[in-house]
Image 1 (cartoon, rainbow, N blue to C red):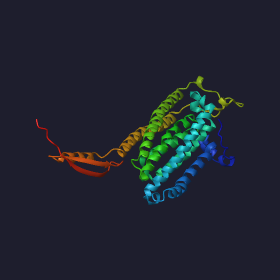
Image 2 (image 1 turned 120 degrees about the vertical axis):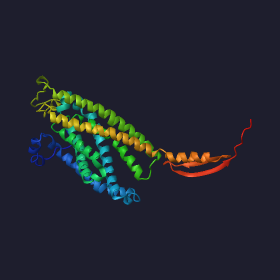
Image 3 (image 1 turned 120 degrees about the horizontal axis):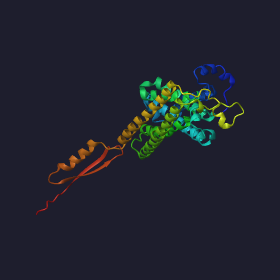
Image 4 (image 1 turned 60 degrees about the horizontal axis):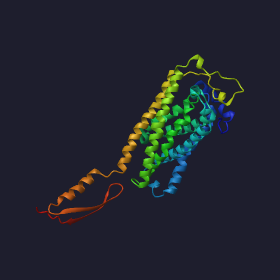
Length: 345
């Protein structure tokens, strides 16, 4: 399936093509306009759209946030927009790209379709912006998100060799959990911590994160490892010949596969980045479970104090009537003495 968007003008790609050919990314110039457009869009969303829209929708909350929190808020807005858009795009390509659906392991490794290249471009533009923000505000986002941005950008750029372009829409589906992760963060800032809405969203977040990132992501990573292993040990008889035009649509998939080999450094770089991303996913899943449990667990100390009140009265029984809010904070506490009559034998 060809890229449904127009190709970049020749005057834009002609000066940069020799450079990208020299670093073995010959297909990247074909999508440079999409990468640039995505980067500019996410940059403007972060610096212009989010501050203005957030101030309009939440005039009492957003302007009063500390500068650090506002920057984090704007980054979450970008993540919410990007994850929603790129998930829809990836699912659409996986549904309609017939050539992609019929790929064998050689085509999954070295094949290329314009539609998958487009998905890579919009994801790459976002991770380029993400890398810039993580470097600028390292004190806010830290090593974890910086490593995620570097690995994700590397993985999507390497696809323009071409290399495992097939898996671009596949791994984009990691982002199906991201909208719910962003909503969870916004609930805290909108003073809805512990609310029913946050509880429902938290359950959906854990379910989507577990199935999309841990189950689906790990399974697809194993498929990548299997394909790369086959590519490392490819024999001459397994090399797919490049047929001169005219080509069938399935032949066009391998039209750019001039080098059907997997250098060791490429296997280590790609699989290392993929393993790093999967490790972060398992780590973040544990942190999310811990965070969500804290939102809806009453403090242990408060329960102990209530039990002590009940035990204080020796002759009578201190009856405790209380109301506990969703944060576990004790709102009211009323006590009435109830007579206890001893049974005589």
